[in-house]
Amino acid sequence: MATGSVIGISEILKNNNFAVLKDIKTSTVKVCNETTGRIVCKAKLEISMGKSKVFEEVLSRANPNLKKING
Image (cartoon, rainbow, N blue to C red; front, side, top):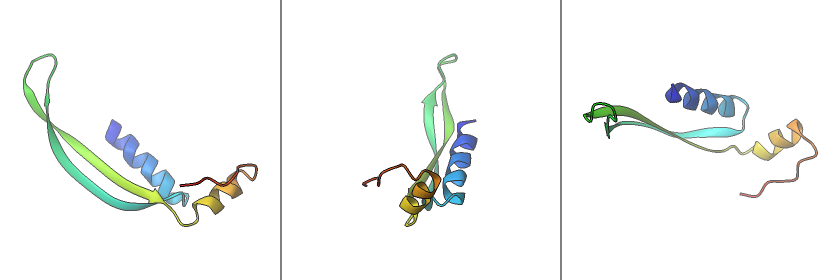
């Protein structure tokens, strides 16, 4: 369920020109199951994004009352 949320949010940011995609990494992580005590492998997804070049412009168009954001 969380994977779908991460993908959905990153797509919204990218499609609205707030962010650009830098990198996508997938891996597995060993986790102890609390109910059975067994070690299971779970998927891990990392999506690296950066602020787009037109971020400030897009944000100011969305809300003209906002001041410029540093960073």
